[in-house]
Image (cartoon, one colour):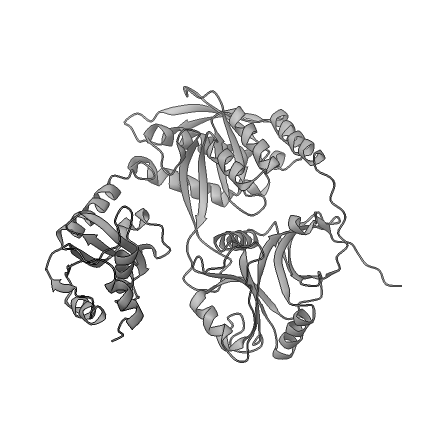
Length: 543
């Protein structure tokens, strides 16, 4: 068993000892994990030390369940030297635990500190504290009233399958008037045309829609944008992707819908009450019918004036099936006004110079496989210490922030090719000074009209290399790119390029750690940060 260093013991012995008795334990978080800011989730454990004499929490930490008893000692030492406010540094006279193994472990670890460690079958203070956590959690309202949950979730999946964001931009606002509703008009804004943040906002006022749009265009600062976001007055339907257990990204992912409300006085609320659920159900049901019946007209630019009235049966089942009249209309004048706001905003800023950066589209060898994935941190650590793997670390962070593992893993672009070609790619990047950034920039084929997101690598000497094209018309690609953006947001832009061999072997499409020959850590950026607009595919002729 490891003992405390002698200098640590001497430092702790200088701290005054009082006659208090402390309770200590580690317990699974389970359903109360929402109360704590931690990535450990339901599998995490709470290490806690409570002063039984004062009735105060001196130290508490959330740790993964697999961590050993050393985590309990670390939290105890912090409770002695740097306790939670308002407690002051002190050594207890006695410690009480309800785990025999922990008792023996502490006796060995705390030798020389003159602290008695005893076993009690129950810890009243800690039991009471966790009971209050669970009681508080049980009072949390459900995300949707039980009688509305199934019908709203079913409707949300129908909207996901219909994909209205495939042809409607976020400025193509749709007006919804529900008969008998105290809100005269709801303004539906469909999000997701750019392949990220799929969902629908139902603004309860036109002013709120315009105010947020103006703030989003201005982008004065992240703080001001967050303030404008919380000041919106709307209900929302959003989709989040279900977690993948495999580190390699499957582009076909499942989604989970969630509903909520935004209001200047409430901020963001992740649940709807009965009355709200009925209004949202009527509005989204009518909107879905409107989109399905007018898809061709809604694909036009600009969208013409369209108006339809529907009879929507109430979501809540009653003896007499009641239907409500809902009028749905395109709002071309409002759409034009929002478009004008974007144009006016662009005039406030000097035009960006055309980029004169060489862009190479033959970087990835023929026959290679390119995937967007997320590699677990422990696996990354194993790969980067392999002697045969070239490793470029991103440290310090170019944005001035200290880098720490965040989320479940590091977002990674993986290029799998043959061993000789992989070696050539690695040397190309090394000769260019290393990898600087990974970005996705919009591209357009003026002949076919097809739009893309071009995946590009930027090296330290400024060169750009295209590694893949992701069509906007392909939902799997759009969802894969959405997941990439979400993962990079979790890591604050910390990502990597992994170059692997084995494309013709048994590990084709699923490279193993032994196949990975290089890891280049980099910063995820946007095309705007490079000063690029939409890139056009132009033919090249040889004479």
